[in-house]
Length: 387
Image 1 (cartoon, rainbow, N blue to C red):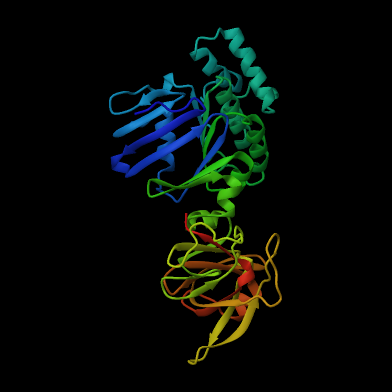
Image 2 (image 1 turned 60 degrees about the horizontal axis):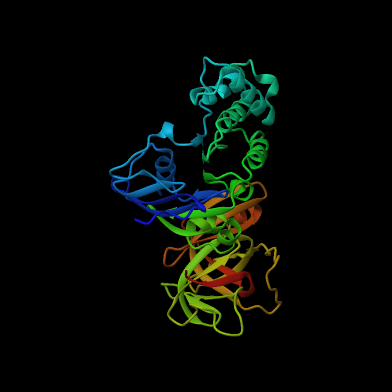
């Protein structure tokens, strides 16, 4: 197998059979890469392979051009310049904050005085200079996570692995730690696992979507969230995704036969590559653009119920925009104060979210199983060829 380019901090080109994970993944040097996907998709496997806690059944893992894991070779975790920061800080309970941070340099042969000086500098950098003498049980959750970050960076790692580092923190504390991570990790090689879109925007440059143990989409955070290629990525971006096949210049049709008319943001006078009749395509739409109409009577007539107008930022608008109307059935509701997120299932099982006022949801008696019609202006639906 050819050695990876020097511009890559790591590459994974390997398979783990019992987890049904097969990955072909580059990690660029000096970039912050987020790994996202549903539970069980293989995200933690990526971190375990990079950290040295897991060995592939076939293929190889490289760090800076060196093969560190394969069926025949394995460099143990303590010999890799890779550190991990997880949900729980994992500080040594019998050591002070200062000694916790100094532990790494000391373990790598740094003299005690130099290690303590480095530990003090790292504690100061994370805003915990005054907590050096405290034991972990005397620290708040946010303080402990700051000390854990100082400990991780005190060993000058070549790569930092973050596994949902903010998930266990209170909502009041998390934003401050997120800002600190963004500042202290700037310019470093980072691999981050998260479910939080805020983490993506604040902590990542690039993102890889992993589903079923395979990487299904990759790109910059902005690019992937603007044009999600999977239902998971769409929901992470806060939009709904509908798949189908191309019928015309501005229309696709779902497997159940529902027509989806929209616009193509990347369309040019010539044909868009990949956009041709019969080709696979996707449509994305903002839940705020979806109006819900109640199905009234056996004839199927509809009576307007609630419509939340789209924000419209950066999208074409037209007072005469054609409207899409799709039969659906409510499968879930998530009230959030004055608004309720309604999830409805189309005839082919694809799901579309709508955001309506909670008052409208109550007046319509929306509940799982209720038949509705979803109405969306074509000007609020973006169409793309399926990558």
